[in-house]
Length: 152
Image 1: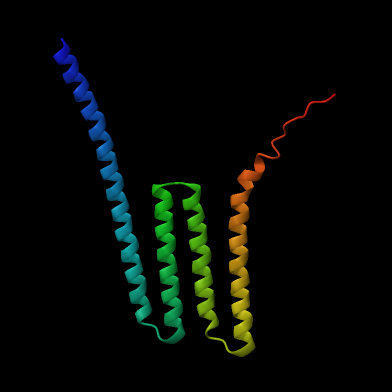
Image 2 (image 1 turned 60 degrees about the vertical axis):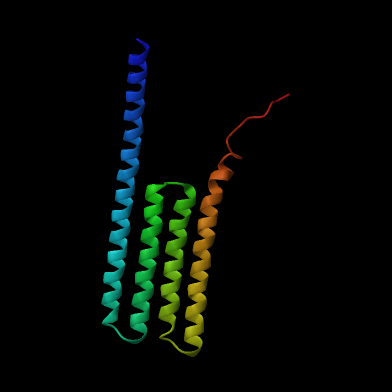
């Protein structure tokens, strides 16, 4: 009787282990396929940029690189949905917008260029502050939980 129980226990353990392994393999395959898709989209965007010249080409390349970084951060957040990964998505979006905005400023000269760069920097700083503020809100919620105090 004992050998049958051991065999049954081993079979059940193997079934669960192989199921978990299959799930890990499937997740890995999905992630690899998504990474390949992101890389292909980036290469296609870079090729579209190659037809351009001057600063328009530089802007196009910055936007393509920014989209790639955002897509990678979103993939990480999809695979591991943590608050840290969600924050990284927001940061990648802010950085991509800032890099593209700075590159657009290169078309301008003198004071207009300085103002453009300051505006881009201010927008980036606001975005970073918004991210920081959004991360701080969940911690603040516990302080105002509506707990009552003892009355005399």
